[in-house]
Image (cartoon, rainbow, N blue to C red; front, side):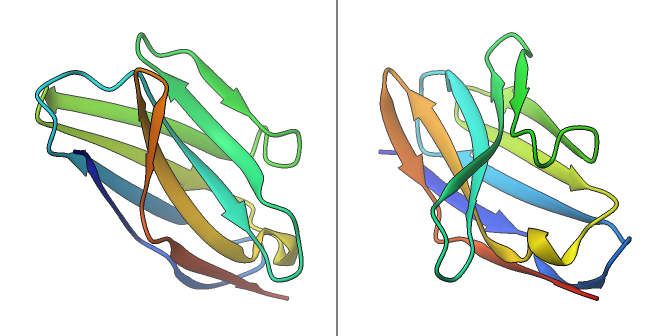
Length: 118
């Protein structure tokens, strides 16, 4: 079983920055990928960023150039991912969920709210 816990959300003005953190723990095997998706009220869920084992990253067009995902694997029992969000816009307001993927199985956290005021 893998536990995923996000932190770092909050209220920020447009143009500001936030860094989200995600801790995935509870497995003795390495995580294949970690990432973030978001969901705003009344909107579809959007995959924001992914980092794969080995360091390859992918971003949604809506955040490319503004958001950066990174990850640290301290050992096979705990992995941490970060989402650095710069130049935030009101349309970035959403609940941000972290996920960890291992062997095609996805584990998600409960989410952290990011609110960007205009």
